[in-house]
View 1 (cartoon, rainbow, N blue to C red):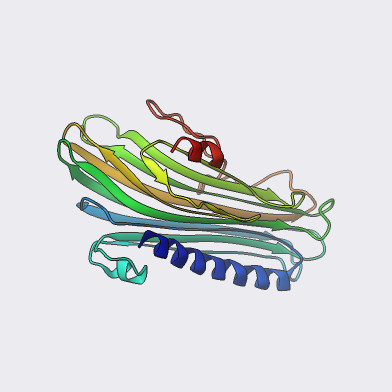
View 2 (cartoon, rainbow, N blue to C red):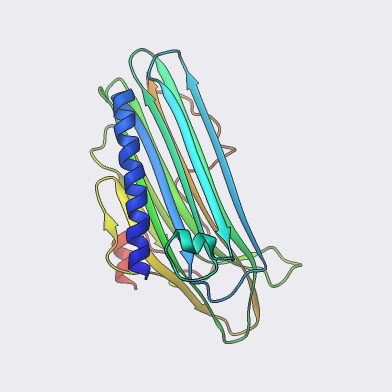
Length: 284
């Protein structure tokens, strides 16, 4: 079932990405595209509250024909089986989201930037002593940046996907981050392919194969952790995408107060880190 799900998710995202690639190439030879999607399913416990969030921002400077900045986002999470049915997965509680940022430029002096964010969350999972909390997950990230003249035109694309599990048992204390899984990628027009990375704690397990191409990364896996005391948990998944094109090379980039899509910097206690895809697999 999980393999079927990752193929379904990968097919949708790849189709969307290919469509975007074709349309952006038609608009301009210089473009950047950052796209991501994810789904979660097969939860061992039911949350008391489900939520989604989306944000998007775009800016275009200059009146050159063919200079565009567009975004598209979507997020769904329910416990009534609707999202599970859409994902072709058995079960009642499923979540999925999608985020895409595209920027393209053509001739003259221009600057175009797009940022998008989509998230889902589940609150108040109550796990009894000696019970195991678990769920399945899929994630896909596509990063593309190219320029007709990389010496004069700038194209940058970057994105990340982050899964987090918090302990919220003690309401008098801030939530404690227990586990995380992060996927991230970036590319500039000067680079022939995107660079990707994976970081995570051992409670997240990615199953082979991890599908990676020159411009995309797709993973399939699960989360599982057993608790020695009754624990209340919160689950968050969020993805951020950014695409920028410019002539000349921009000296300033818009403040990213709305979205933060720099490479993820996490300071965690009592967690194990994995700095690359190979490190992650070697330790699982």
